[in-house]
Amino acid sequence: MVGAPSLPCFDMSWERAPLLKGKTIVVTGSASGIGQETARVCSAMGARVLGIDVTKRFDHVEEFYRADLSDGATIDALIDVLPKGIDGIANIAGLPPTAPADKVVAVNLFGLKHLTLGLIPKLNDGASIVNLASLAGFGWPDAVHAIRASEDVHVDDAARFAVDHQITNEGGRSYFFSKEALIAWTMQNRWTWRDRGIRMNAVSPGPVDTPILGDFLETLGARAEEDARIMDRPGTPQDLAPIVAFLLSDMTTWIRGTNIPADGGMSSNILCEMHGLSS
Image (cartoon, rainbow, N blue to C red):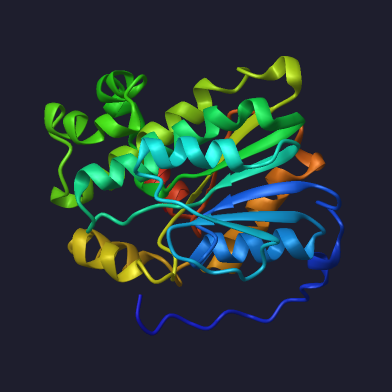
């Protein structure tokens, strides 16, 4: 990805559109990368942003809550102190595949689910939940057995689950599985809270130029080099945050259980190669 062309300059006046005016949005992972940019964009669009991260940083948030999303008791305490009247949750926090495997699945999957489900009673009717998945979750159909086994696992049992199902860091498997299961969970909850108008969707980035991009390059090796050869450039937080904000807005009430690829065309390239449509 080194030496990728610089981004063209676009008119960013859309940021001043009050799409989220008056809404209260929870953003996990708000201290850096896509989470920080999502907090900034949501704030610029008129939202009151409640930031959550393990690293203390107050940029673009009205309130900040420091929390380790791999620990069940911490998440329970967080659920207790967060206010009622939440209009949206942007589940952005995540660990890279270089972190211990049990921590990766705990934060990226089980902790995310624990927090989200715990906050459902505090959501306003018509609220939107947006999960940051990944191109790494593209192969979820091949992992259905393990995904089904993960459905009722408590965040504090992440280590046991990882051992029982051989979810290790080899080849980035812990990260890939966490995103595969997250995409499946998003689809499964397409109508779960339909009676309250609460919807859940996901966004799947390809490689993104954030502080953890190096972790992916280190873990994926040749696979990352192939992606770099095909892509024109890695994504940026500025590419992803507006999509998350759009899904949090009232413009997307008919989008339910959908995973939106935002990967510079990588998922389309994979599908074309799979089905003999490559030019």
